[in-house]
Image (cartoon, rainbow, N blue to C red; front, top):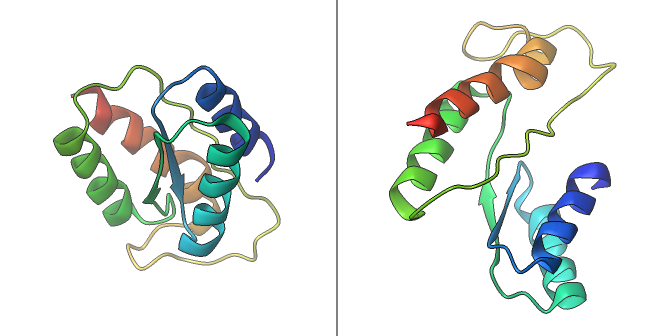
Amino acid sequence: AGIGKCVAMDLARRNARTILACRSRERGQAAVEEIRAATGNPAVVLRLLDTGSLASVRAFASAVLREEPRLDVLVNNAGVTGLPFAITSEGLEQTFTINYLGSFLLTNLLLG
């Protein structure tokens, strides 16, 4: 939704293979279908990613590096505000993990 969906739509309009990294399979698939229909680009795909889980980030990065021949652009757009204080299963503060650590780790893992 929001800025991330707009960026994905623009990339797909430029005929780029576009990977939507989403927490929710249902919402992500709906966005994929909407973007494909609006752009005519069949190379829009969904991959599940929860930036609040470093294990999820590692699994996502591993799959991208294994499955994609190259990665030209990475748009980090995950962000939340107003969440109650919570600790992740990995012992990290949830908001900080989602907004900073997850994206930082993902970027570094994808740099290879």
